[in-house]
Length: 251
Length: 313
Image 1 (spheres, helix red, strand yellow):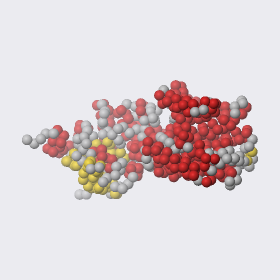
Image 2: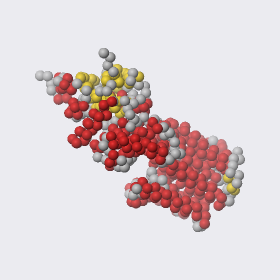
Image 3: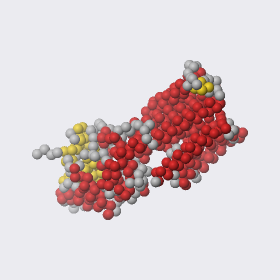
Image 4: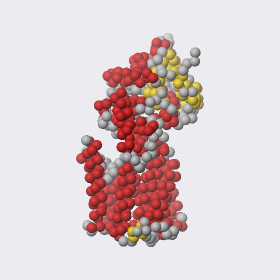
């Protein structure tokens, strides 16, 4: 049975001046799944993300998205194909309001973005759609609040709303729960589950409870290499993984 | 409501500024001083568009002021262009220089961007020092003012004043429009968080280049107009100290505010004019002002005022 693979890497490798951050990684992400990338600090998870979204250029290897080789593409073009990422540090436009944050994302498909002679009032036609997106992540009350003034968890929600404005096929979330309190974690986890209904999600996450609750497949990275892959059950019983995480040495 | 209050403040400020400037010849202020200040105000505003709204700190902006100056001075004097054509040519020359230097400079970020622009400005300075048509240290003297659009004789000071005011206001309104356009929104987003803008699919270099060229062109408009006013183009306008002076004007008035660069330019030019008797001490005073800006009022005069009144200016 041929699996429906949306994103695949073959021999993905990234070297930084003598240091191999990602070594020969082969990932296969099934369409419609929530796939988690976990591993100890410095395992190369974020580097992997940066390679997949072309914020970094791989040293070797290939990346295929929707059957298309995107290895040599520019970051902005990858985003245009519907493979959209978030960042570890919350990526909002801090001095724009929540509405404006989402509208910036909507603006791209509208076109005419080099129109420097036109009033920005032409963008008001996007406000309704932007409001709907804010509403969708529970942020309608924050419409006129600048992002910098929003609580952390809300900023992450805003980031997701902005990402969703592009209507991406696949979302890459880099530590969506980092630095969040319990309440926020549940809200954002619900949100991820909901947006993943008709999309594919690849996320890097440290919170193992979140990972076990949300993900269909988990890939464990250590020192830039894939250590194990499978569902949560398989992974948590894997002796190598236990050692990597807990430092339990075989006697 | 909040938005309306902001718009009102800006409208009132615009009416006030325009009214004041329109009255200048009637209240006995030396019009040549004001015309010179208006040219520098437009220059500062163009620089502010790039650094304050585009987040691109150019340290070589004088190259556009000076390039436009030489181009229009040469066109008016040697080729006999009428003033409007000379000004347009100067503006285009600056924009052209902006395309070339910008395309290379925007590949670098932050201080490296600044250093690249400074390097280009220095290269152009030495080019203008050596090349025959600029007459080196002498500059291009006796540029004819001519008849604007075949109707207005610019050798009459009142005519010249209102034409310069018109050019300044047109440039000012264009900058305001750029900032508040769909393009301005993207530019703002890029300044706020460039990686995020890329991840949303924006090819940010193109927006930065467009901003760079627009800013260069507007600086050129200022430089070309200045040449018609002063009737000469000289090396002062391409010297690196001029690039530094415009930084000071913008910082003093308020970086990223619409009116800050205008006020900043007027203050600096007024200081040079009225403190001329102090000789080199003017530079010391400028240095002290710069230190004061950095230490105590980082938002600049207009920036601090807008902050205190909770309005946008």
